[in-house]
Length: 225
Image (cartoon, rainbow, N blue to C red; front, top):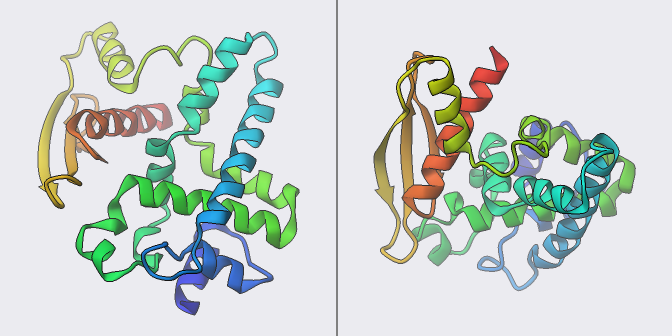
């Protein structure tokens, strides 16, 4: 577990004073009677508050409804799971045998819960300032999408409208693989567009969610060019 904690610290650029908090954040309920669900509860509240505070400050003209919808677009299972995959968090988690066998290391709910637990652990370790900085850093790739005008449209819609506005063809989505048990399948989908030389990929509990993630990945690459 020490190696997992060190890897986590490198990924999030944060050094835990109390390593046991990090270990607990990485422990799924299937692995131990002492697990990360209480930290997840705490982290969920801190995450919601931090995002609400940032949106309130950055979008002074947005209505309460706009702010709520922007927060929902940023704080959700799919976004947090995406962050977890970017951090390569799955291999660091301590899971029980059954959870391992059923593909828990890449399950969106397990990954998103772990991100919230890590946030809770950081808060208990050193307080709100460090926690806020890490949350905003982790969410920074998604923040440009969170504006009153864009929040009403999902990633697939925005990508298609962007391509059509520039005279390009529509995105092509393809299921690359389906893994896991019948009741807990993980879909991997590719997205090909003419503006990028390589496809982007997304994963989710169904094809629609995976396509949205692949489209979101394409939008981020286009924004970075």
